[in-house]
Length: 216
Image 1 (cartoon, rainbow, N blue to C red):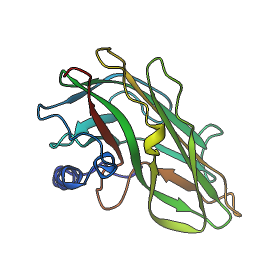
Image 2: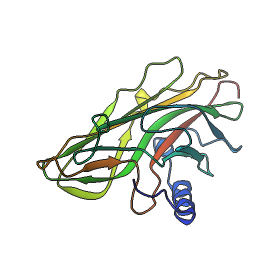
Image 3: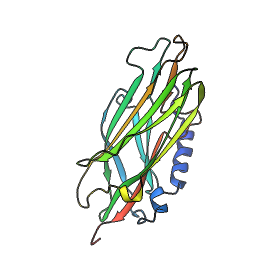
Image 4: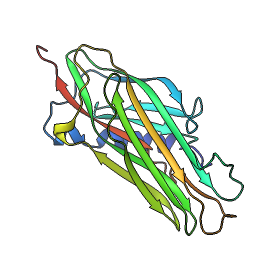
C-alpha cells in the first residue's frame, strides 16, 4: 500500500482544489453561496474504505469537495487473495447548504496510481446520487498494462441532465466507486490499481453546480 499524502502535500492539494474553476460556473449557473458549506460523512461501506480511511474536505470557495482514501487498492497476481481483485466503497454524505441554495454535481475528477504488469488490466467505475433519486449512470474507465504511473479520469454531466437536490429538503448524497484489476501474463507478479498517487494530489474532486431556490 502506498503512503497517505503528507500534510504539506494535502495543503497544496487543498489550495489547488480551491483555485480550480467550478465546471458548473463555466456552464453559466448561479455563483456559489457566500456562506461556508460543510460535508459530513455519515456512513462508509465497502471493502475499499475500511473505517477511518476516507475523509472529505470542502473547497474554500464552495466550488466542490474532495474525498481522500488512504487504503483503497485492488490487486491481482502474486500473493493476492481471491477477493483482492475488486474493491468498492459507498459513502453516505450530508451536505449542509446555506438556506436559499441548492446544488447538483456537475462533474468529478478521479485520480490514483496503477502498477500493471504486461497483460494486466484495471477498471475504475463510479456513480453518485441524491437520496430518493436514481443513481447517475455508472461511468467506467479502463487501463491496460504494462503501466506504472499516476492516472486521472474526468466525468462531466451535461447541463440538461444535472439533478439538483430539491429545495428545502434534507437529502443525503451517495457516492459509489469501484476498482478492479486482472492478472498479467505472468500470474506470479502483482498488479494493482489504487485511489492514491505518487505526487500527493487529491484523489477525487466533485464539482458543485449551484442554484438559488425560488423566493430566496
